[in-house]
Image 1: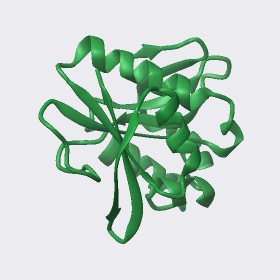
Image 2 (image 1 turned 135 degrees about the horizontal axis):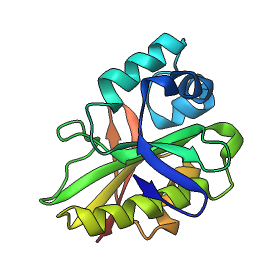
Image 3 (image 1 turned 180 degrees about the horizontal axis):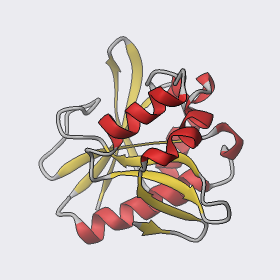
Length: 166
């Protein structure tokens, strides 16, 4: 668990499926995050069981005031990266529900994850990849000290890669 001023980053639980569906069923969120829009609570439950739960570094972004998961952040599993990584480097990914955009919460969550990685993992750097159109995600990365180092195409999508040395 990672705690910040307004958030708790914790492992996903099956009982989070309804909250996950509430935000992951918004195509405005999924389109720029490059994953399929959730079509049912059952689909969200399967994502928790089969994608989030097996990854020890996949965290629900939970608002302290409501105890509701409103997004996700974590390290991309090895071999699932969207860009090649250096030795001792991991790719991180994040998204947050539309009602919480532009409130600094994603920046706060990423800052917490960076601290966790720096203090607990033997990593030298973190990588973030974004759809070139996802200006908000790029701004979050830049606010947290990541620097653009590559523009490339991933599965037909114009993308950008950012790196932060820990």
